[in-house]
Image (cartoon, rainbow, N blue to C red; front, side):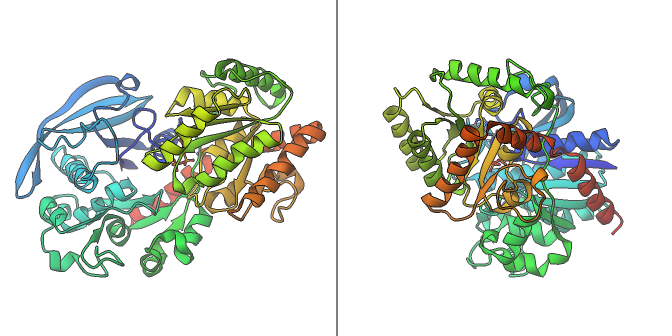
Length: 491
Ligand code: ADP
């Protein structure tokens, strides 16, 4: 099969969170299985050009219709760790992708509507006719809309779309001007409840809803989150739309790329280890302490890695720091916040705790350091309010770092409580789970985890090894996506 991914991120060249990892990891898995995969991305000024090989111009003067006129783009091409990527570079006074940031601009919906349009135009003009177009999140929600309303009539009639939702919270609301800009026009047609009209704001269209309505199949990134979005509050207003389209909806768990996230081959950690040489993990703990100037004492090290965002349960992240101190543990946080209030809060904490030899807060994005933390920590805490899949707990498991998680979304599908899980036998359990969002729920799970580390070291090691034995590679999800692609391809 010939598959084209259209996305706003691809790790490690463009990565703000899990989406980037998924686009890269899934593409790699599909190629290993013998399929041809190409990835279309925006050419951001702030992406990591050092991660691209063979950079060259692939297409010059691609004319993309926009507001009845057109914007000329160049398309660059290069390999990102073996994946063939195309980067769209518009020559526009709007400087769509030259903002020194991937997201967070007032006109994000226009930026990504343009990107979606340009990606389709590129397929059309460059004579690319993939079997499957796989697009991701609100940024590319208009891809199936424009494909089936416009491009189908110009030569892209056999392409089928799989639309993957990594986060329901951000849906891309927009006004009628997006319709005018993209050539969809006819607001009276698109501002219908069964098309793009937002379910709650009759004066807005919703990119994600468009992606759901028009795609041949759509999914979110874990089976449990698919259930939550359909029946619970985590569809963020799209529950009824999911319900109407439930026949083409599913939940496919993300995988992680074990060529990147694997303590046996990880080039960012000083001491590689395997389940057979788990004692070498201690050397990474020592290296981590040295790097972050933490004291060397016989105590557990708990970590948090992730965006600092309401989704991630920041009040519990904050509490986990102080509860670790109270229980005489060490805590390392690596995170970045886009919201000023949250950023200020953690900046303040960082200054306040600066001289504490048991705490380190690293505010910012640091891929290399994240590897060392996964390798050196004993526990990783993931207290999310909601979590479509969550990668950090799966990465932690591979590095023998025991997850302490809140039982929501994909965390339910991947972490099984050592003491209380009823769905898995004791030898398959791998971490600690709590359910409520109050402090005492988190504390009780942390206390059980710390207690095992302190008083039953052999049992703790057994739990680490059980976690390392789980297979959260792309192997199974790769097969699941291919089954979906096969299904829609013949429709
Ligand atoms: P989300 O997609 O909601 O951000 P995930 O758990 O799915 O969360 O994916 C997070 C990915 O981003 C992981 O690979 C994690 O290691 C990485 N990550 C998150 N924050 C940082 C950071 N500040 N520095 C380095 N890597 C980070």
